[in-house]
Image 1 (cartoon, one colour):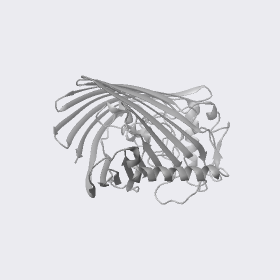
Image 2 (image 1 turned 90 degrees about the horizontal axis):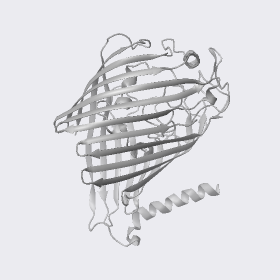
Image 3 (image 1 turned 45 degrees about the horizontal axis):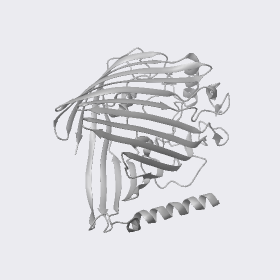
Length: 435
């Protein structure tokens, strides 16, 4: 209780200093106030996919084209500046993808002063904003961090994307970014509960909202996902320019107390269960020379959010039990990426590769290799045409396939089949409008 009160008081003092005590640091930032004003901007992306792959289960078969509005956001930003130079901002992000239940994606307040930038509300943290790696270089739909999972049957147990397990997404949090000093900047975020968003009540036990990006684990089971309490993320960047050369080095680490709990059918575990705590990190670097850019990245999830014991089970009185076996002896996956990009007028060319590795337990593995080539064309301001070709090769094992099929049975998902080894070629074309 003493620690909690001390922490709350410290946050209040820092906020007061940020909002009103800048002159104590020896100077006034600006000479006049700027009244708050509203700015509206945003973007939408619509992509068309063609996929040819070995495994065509789960409705992803044949040469059928797929058209998807993968990302679409509207930003409403109200910002102003006080007489003493304190900047303040309120931002709402509307997720404008048709049929989406989660309409408000981000909703937060920002205070910016000489001592740094504070954000409070539903927003992402430094584990997202401060990583510079191959994902910053590749164009198109994002390559290994894009929307390929909507059309490609990834092998069971393979990690995908370019985020750590334990990434808090846009769960409710407080974030601090330091001023940039000689190229260095630090970011820190504290998320009390990664399953909390908006005005949800305090509830450290129940809750499995699969719409929250901070709730995810290593099983494809939407009704109940692991989550973190007291999640802390720390990010660090260093930027330097010398003539035509520039470099950005980055890193982030995430920790949290990890749990699994569900009180709703069809899953019940008899109470909140502690999983192996989140301990993950990510490193990245981007090197630029004139019109060239090169990116490198690595992430390691450790054993984040794995069961602590062997034979961890999901129970369903009607459908039976899904036993996770020796999953606790494995790991939560590693990945590394490399990318290169070149800009020539309105054209941007990119290529990237990502490798993922994961021990699923019982000395078995699930891996993937992802190759991408992209061309982006910007004929006029605000309009971008993207083209992407991906080759994906993913591999897994029979134990992991059986494990995931058990979960599908508990979830009453008769049309889902855990995927074995697969490979495929994807062609993607898209259009992006931004303003």
